[in-house]
Length: 365
Ligand code: ATP
Image (cartoon, protein in one colour):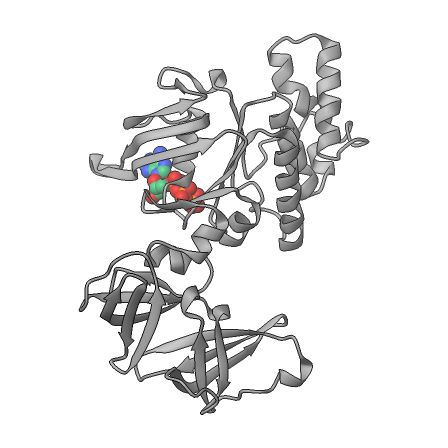
């Protein structure tokens, strides 16, 4: 069963001069129950607008939103089985932590004892016991975020919506909260739909990710699928770092293709898709999947070039290698041995080796 389903959803805003602006374009998504599902994309790609249409704060211009199989068009936000956690927490400053969390339940006129128990459980879950009587200004950013979360959880929604909830926290706290949120989602077993522009955050937390650009969904998949098999250049570029080598298919058989890069280097790539001979394609290579060797080290055809940049990054070192006057390739090498740290210097001639099964081939030039 899908917790949430979007069928052909578009949103057109009327801007100045009554100009139409299409913020979301024909989005169809199926979000299974109990999943941590992220909407990922650059600023302005329509993530928040999609979330707001699920919550009911915006109505789709065309298309429909279904929650637990029910069409939501005529359901106002407070009658939808969802709750939203915003980036700015939206806590009431004059209420205590416990009162903030209890607020939604009091609106429903639940019995006092039941409210007290549920608030206690929610605060225990977000590890805020003992801080019940503090006001929001007496809490750190991470604690305020936890109150916002407890306030959303206490209503026991079927679906929780998050709009960049960790954006205001510093990097270390954000990383801690990412893992906490993921554990909490697994513990609660409810569906989380999470908006972020941070690819690392989405990879860390999600069961599935939908990558968006200019209001359209480009790819939906698990973090591994999105990273290892991006279906277009935008996704490959947005998620992590990628090298793109443009080449021409010179051979095709049932096991794969041979692509001629830079008119000189044939690369065989196993793939099940068919690409006609002569087609211009793009090869996607992750920097950590290429290895760098001294010139003449390999006795086989391979890319060769000159090191133009070396940046030590702690866990690994990032090399930029000029292949031709027009093209470069980035290679990252893990710093496992100290003795290897100064192996390649700027100006040195090197060879690049790539495992053919880690190269992704895209049918775009
Ligand atoms: P960010 O990460 O910056 O929050 P986003 O991906 O969440 O971006 P949205 O907030 O959904 O993007 O906005 C998508 C586009 O729609 C943007 O160009 C935005 O300016 C526009 N937009 C959003 N709300 C409205 C509105 N009420 N009226 C007009 N245009 C809007």
